[in-house]
Length: 132
Image (tube, rainbow, N blue to C red; front, side):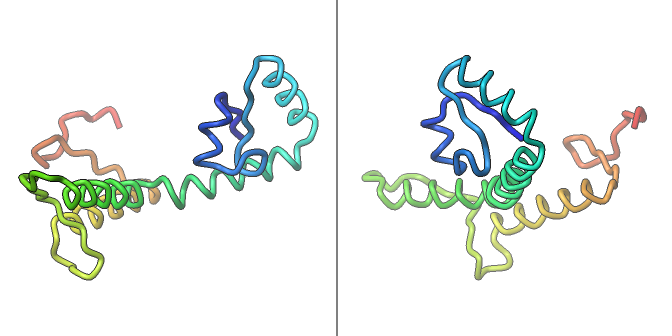
């Protein structure tokens, strides 16, 4: 479970007291920490809901999609129209650069989740690092 400062901003991302616990002062942080240390079921419920939200809405695929939409919106509203958007993101197109990046990110995430250690250097060649 996460107890975090700046409740006002945190509430824009998570449901306060449901998915995450927020505080505005040190005294409030101490009070909430003490409470949740003695209420394990509530602590676990908040932790599970917060983790679920983070995994669904803040993974690399979702974040990349939001970033591309924001850039496309900026481009559409730009008075100069000189911005060139190379990585396009189109859910209907299977061959856009944006979709290829999303597919690769999802594949890497799947490999990490399955314990596959396939570290490569920036050129895509096997890494010389044999410590793992």
